[in-house]
Image 1: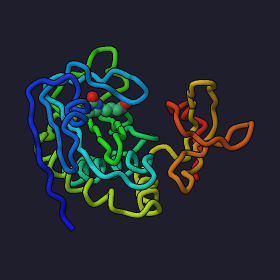
Image 2: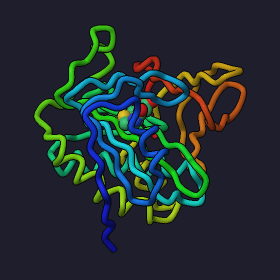
Image 3: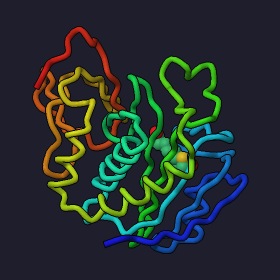
Image 4: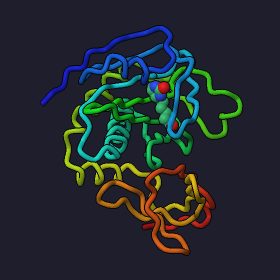
Length: 228
Ligand code: BTN
């Protein structure tokens, strides 16, 4: 089954998430040339000057909201692959290309509907302080990527939880790696082992297996990488 999206374009907005929330209707997509108050996960600021893909889509979420972030990640990786870019997924919401962050996903729930925000660095400038960790994809045309993401998103969000998790794992660059997890109350390190049946990351630490529900995950000690 295909989906049809209605796209609203803006020159400059605070955040496409805010505009989508104000106009909450299933299959509405908000795209902006630039955002002056773009936001990322866990209250992080998202730098969004002209040249990138900054979009928010209103969708009916799967029963388990967390799976929406994973499904959107898979949709973005598939869309990039259609445009000959090989990307991978860092838990839970990062799109990586050549070891650096090319984009991210922010999902927010408003009643019965969810807003999936997707930001991908394309022709936009990356601030100097982020050059070591972020990358842009200057050869990708924004509207081609937008179309491909929407097509893939439509397909991914209809899949079963098990299928979403299986596909996320297929595109993961997280599993098998040493990670440092920063949560509100604790920071711990261990090996990213697997996703559980709800799509949460399981990290094997000295104190046992931890389930990462809300936390930032950073890669550490590449020489200790472990192949699962
Ligand atoms: C992250 O990596 O923390 C998530 C970044 C999400 C950025 C996108 S850009 C479009 C949408 N509007 C926002 O303000 N944020 C998301």
